[in-house]
Image (cartoon, rainbow over all chains, first blue to last red; front, side, top):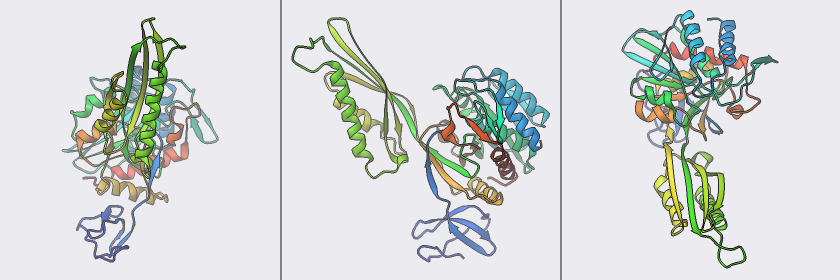
Length: 54
Length: 349
């Protein structure tokens, strides 16, 4: 089970999770991107930008 | 559909001028090209283009729009960029939908439905409202420019505002404030209120007030001021609070109304659709980014009704929307086609 990169808590992954999916730490709420499933590896979720227009 | 065909499709679509309400010729062309590419093509009761591929109980809707704002820009390719009205907003995205749907290995049991909606650029959003109750997709992508590596998750809301103020005619040499001065002060005080309210908030969470028109008139007995503008609204959409503030500032001398409310919409990101986009963008050696937009799109209309995983994705820089310099980099358009092709081959629900 991967660890939260912020608070070191265990991060639960669904059995059918896929690379690219966003998951969060149930302890501190930080969001992560699943970068690998086997072995499980997390990285911080993509940045959020504000953008003009439609 | 190879890259050359995908570029030809986009260029042909841009060659037909299709401002809101005049989309029929562009819809017919797209239906013809989509059918040649293997999609089942038709039009619906609103005049929307519909293209389908795959069969099964699970539907994925790709909702673009085929109308543009006014002002035809003859298509021309210069330095690998297609300059044309609609190249970015949003025929680039719509052509991407058709090309990717034609190319994708669609999973068994999934039907992909491409919709080219009419009148997205008009306040009516006729095409989106027509389809809203006719589909219940498991996942949806809105065709609007996010850039090849961008995934748009939300749009602010919008409403129109107006003030009508009247008071007995005053002589400019007399005492008292003119109706024009009173209305100008009303707007200034509301802007000051917005500045205080927006303090320390990011742009997506701010209330943005825009004054578009200010007219004064008199019939010799009554002086009148008419102001029109709009508000861009954050996710919590404090419409009642704003209406109250605007009315309080005009108590006793002006009538305020807020109309044509479009609610803001912010989608969830923890789902297979977003995961498939992130994975496909990384496979194209790009770094995915989430985007929150200050404008509105058809996501504001269908998002609350469909309640499914939904994002906006499409090639191009939205800062070029509605400008004379509207253009899309063709390599980026083709990259977006490849990325969406991979997404449509994934299990999205």
